[in-house]
Image 1 (cartoon, rainbow, N blue to C red):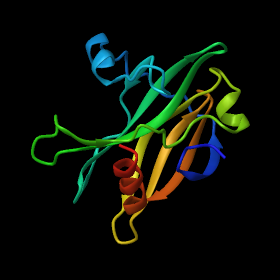
Image 2 (cartoon, one colour):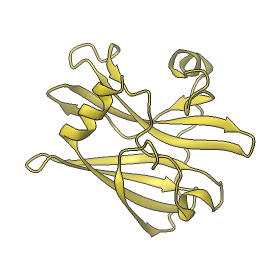
Image 3 (spheres, rainbow, N blue to C red):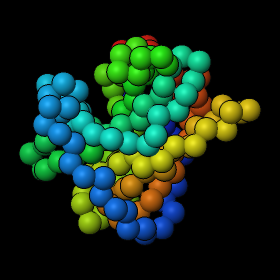
Image 4 (spheres, rainbow, N blue to C red):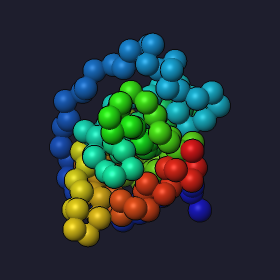
Length: 154
């Protein structure tokens, strides 16, 4: 079973997404971790979500494999008052390309987080992500479990 946490993938439709632009090399060097799922590059994701534990930051990381790039989704918690301080950052990905519509498309092996919605009463977190740069998908989790995942694997 993959290390990733989020389940409930659902391919929706083909929707072209505007690129966010490249992440600066300085950020890549500070954020990337050698020999991991995010060793090549780390970049933006959805707007951070304010939680009692800190700002939940969903981002993408890139691994260069013998078959090309692999884009996965990760998470970190940032301090509420000083968001440049990382409280916790999971060393494992939340989601990586595991199913056909994430592996085959315009760009293979892509899980790229684009937007996140939190239903505060239920704690249900919904993340919209691009699959293989071809489809828009949904992944669901619960905020307390995602925060625990980030903190316990930090």
